[in-house]
Image (cartoon, rainbow, N blue to C red; front, side):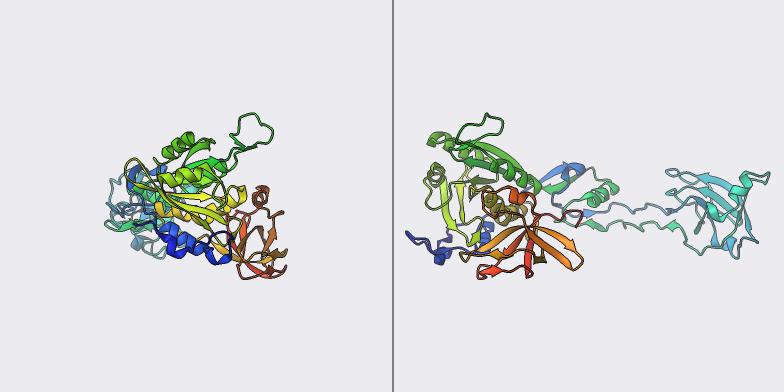
Length: 438
């Protein structure tokens, strides 16, 4: 498809006013147009956790495959225990025993019972299981009473404690639908219908390139005037969290050949993310390389943090177009913009149908100021109080302060057209994580 969102983004020259800013939703929909669901792969079921099912799963047989016992006790016929009470037990002849995993060899006839374990198939003729505690088994075991008989002290209705054949899953039934995300229960269902492998949408490989002459790779000795590259690591971790496989390209050097080689290496994946060097005024080698290798636009999105954003697609060696998102260099801006734009793209490649983060309404505990008419994503810690959710700002909202995200579990949204939200007002919060204690 042609990459030409210019009509959505009038470009101004010189001073950057609001008139050519993209709304968050506009930017996201332009980005998502260039992503599609990836191809499928076959994987062992346990390795497919978190991936999207690429086929309907049809039950090849009934589960349970035959009626079985829901308790340890005695398989009997309901007609033989009618009227049984504690003072007037019904006595039945014990003709055998069935352990779980074994098949019954006896058939129940009038006045007989078979000792049975939970999960064991029931003998023919069984229509009720009497639990051990409703019999005189214990008294018999400590007395000289005949152990070939059992006294039933309680009447149960037909069908009690018998699991019917196909009661859980019926043969031919669609037990899991294509598009489901595989969690522990789904993996258990796959195993229960005998599937060792499963077809799923493969995980996207997301290449991540850090740029900037001032950054070093963690593990190197620190140098004056330099900082360690945190973005590559936080963004790679975010890619993993949402189901992708990160490919760290390292740091683009300040010469065009090395930078170009690193970008080319990133085109072996499904998606390329760069951080830093995307503001309209930036002089940046990466920009020149991206322009040379494909089509790229530099946007201003009406949000804070995270206004500068680049988006485009680059020509890979195999003839494919690889989408690229250029995130801002500030650590918080990069992660907030990743949540809004890259996470939905990864989910779309994974075959997910829902991309929107859960939002809740909370009472803001501190004012949020909106000085420049952009949508503000304020880092907050949401707690649950007696009167509902409370949102607390997590310290400095400057976009270089990564520790403000450390305590945050959500982003409180102040709309672009609201100058200020006062303490006590209700605010919409996009939840980053739902911690267990909430």
